Image (cartoon, rainbow, N blue to C red; front, side):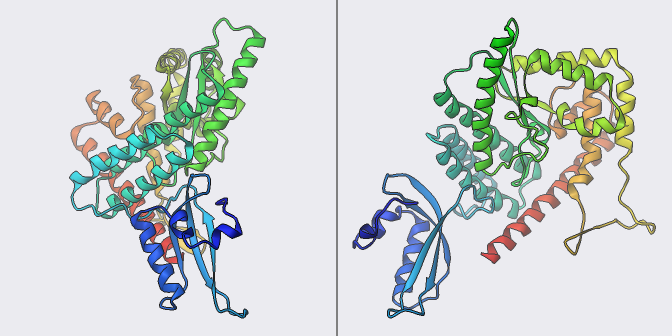
Length: 410
């Protein structure tokens, strides 16, 4: 993994060659010295190594004693880290004004990353910042925006890195974010929902096939990098690397025409994610054209709104017969699905955004724009914004508990 031979590990300077000069590694080296002197018990640490080839590697250092041996020594083992969802510390943050420059610096480093691994290491720093922001009571809207901005920066840089290997795109294209990725309603555990739209006008069938092959290869690179960075693959395979969602503009338009014309309350459950659309990279005019086509089809198929409204009304308030909040049994514990609690509000905003041709995908922004369209009065807007942010605050606090449980088990 690190490229050093057994002979290398016998050299006196091996530790200075292995470990980078960082506060994190200083702590590890101090522990190892105390361990070899018999002053502390074996344990695990996160550290950062430099391989023999000069690459930086995030690892877990584990130490254990050798009892059945002539020499009562220790075994050290290294295991690599990819994206550290549970994060670590990133300095001391005392005031809110400290967040912005720190986050801006991390985003800048992502944008300038020279490799996917460098981008992942930088995202590890962001996780520590987000963790402290949550613990200090930072507003959920700021947390969501920060996570979403980092996600967009990672996508853009991964596309650029992939294109240095594959060459420039043969035709104009846009990398699309769907669902929570498009809305910037993401947590530290969000998966990826994405697609590609490209300009297929005037392409012969053989040319279309060749162009699609390029974009599928590009998408495979990008989706793989995102997965390595902690944005796991979509279980429903709504990803640009799936040939179903790597389409020309005409093909996307035909899909939406069919979906809107043939919509049922059941089919809309599967299509919700496709009506939160945002161009993350590339030619945004292609996504604008998709929006134009959607609006044109909605004018032709006005019954779509009624069907969509019925879908929204299928969500019931989770109450027991005694009007108490109904919990779910998850792995022997009573839990409340907070993500599902947000769903009716998200669908309401999406439905009325379609009605008023509001192309902003963020839920909070949609609510404010709908109030400007007089779909909501001031008290209702205030209540909905409060409820939306309060549920998100609970989601983030729940994640903090998951993080603490994970750290305690290490």
